[in-house]
Amino acid sequence: LARRGKILVVDDRASSYERIVKFLAVEHSVTVVTNPQEALFRAADEEFEAAVISMSLTDFDALRLCSQLRSLERTRMLPIVVVSDTENEGGVIRALELGVN
Image 1: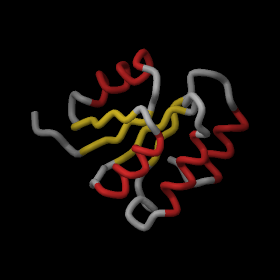
Image 2: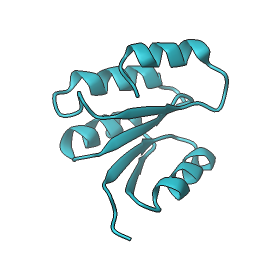
Image 3: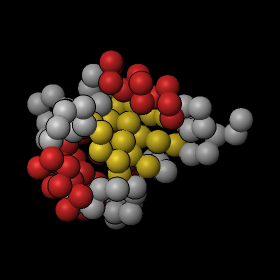
């Protein structure tokens, strides 16, 4: 199968990102980054088709990362999907307000 594009996955828990990678890697090239600052630098330097960001990042606000990605010219229109394994209605609403998909 031909790969369709590169997906950036930002998650610092292997148990979580391994499931995401297993699903996405069937048709996409997946880059996993566990450090949100590195994710921002990679997104600014590389071409990604989409980003998948965990809402449960340790020691970092995932919504802040979404906001930073939206502020960069290169990633302003990048589709962003947030993943949450807890009920975080307020966080999801805020993420939608920031323009995540």
